[in-house]
Length: 318
Image (cartoon, rainbow, N blue to C red; front, side, top):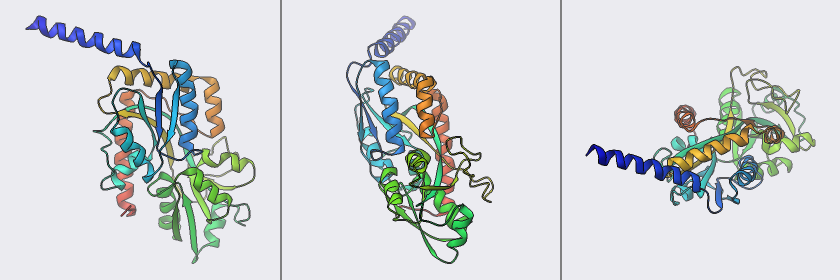
């Protein structure tokens, strides 16, 4: 019996090694939960390009926006667990675990955490025609008035941050306008459709630098190098306010651990590459290399933390 168990263990080790050494043998699909042109899409395309170079196979980015990233998550949750269909999602997947009564998947049971790529703070921006030059200006101008704030969608981290800051902390009559991703929200801001945008910094960084949108505050605890001179929300008088969005890669449950480990190692090598780091910096994003175990622990803590925020705020998709 002991010999049989030892033989089985040896066979499993050989099988895992073969899976890792032969993978990948065909194109890999990255299913992004948000619209093309947004933060997650930009990160996915940069990481996908570098992974393709490292793995020797095409990495195809497919945008499947909708329901705050849930549409793409359901697609990948039902895919073959062979390492060729992967999910690119954001903080939204941790948020949606509580925000939706039935998101259509279980974040723990239906996925294998692979890697976190980068994270970035949010930013509050207005159209250049808006006379407000600071967050304090905006809040003063809309006291007792209706204010519209646009975000990448219901339940996004930018939505929850905007709701908490503008309604709970500032006490404004803030009305949420949800768009189907960061890129459509940015377009709305450029068209002056809403009074202010609460959005991930990379999505609008180019528009800010081009003078097409005006930044009022970033949601990190410390100022960011990509936007010199722009104060934090905390510096504007709301102590300890912080919100950031990360972009992660997950695989369908049942994916071979050797394949997931290979992907994690290759993603972390991409994040360590100086040229890639420079391009991430240009997006306003910071690499967040983690092991698979670290990512799994971080994801659990994020689900719990955002769950508490959602329950306290009363935000609901119903």
